Length: 114
Length: 114
Image (cartoon, rainbow over all chains, first blue to last red):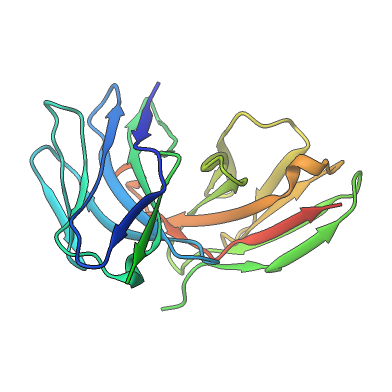
């Protein structure tokens, strides 16, 4: 079955530091890949997505590249802000055989200090 | 455009009671998904409804059930509540071609079972 593995957190950084949150996946088909963000007390919001190999998703300074050869979709940001403190979820979706179940990673908490 | 809405925002029940959670998808979205987000466990897929039918369910006991109405809104019912059912319950909706579509999440209902 499909699965998503994220690095465990929390990830603690100082403001303006470089961020990488690793995400790898296993899927039998050709999934779309997503990063969602959950701010404290809120639901999940889409951060970025990529629907095919070598696509790069980007939003709000975050970016991730769909790497089929390494089955990875690592999230990066060049300079984090305190307001980026949140939980980040990597996810995939893959429709096969008429059935569709999205798969989420366990989430990685990011804490950014001033 | 209104987002996904959920009600109530908070719900307190005692063991053995029943809980009913409600979700209204974004206009034009036909699919509704329910997730349980227990502390430290990430998102666990519960149920998927589309066009009024249950399309798939996650690894949860039958006391978790629901339905989707003709207007595509949805209810999640949890019978015989147990303490471990305490969690944030998230609803999400999407349009057709779901495998490549973003899921839009509501703010969640926080259920506390005493």
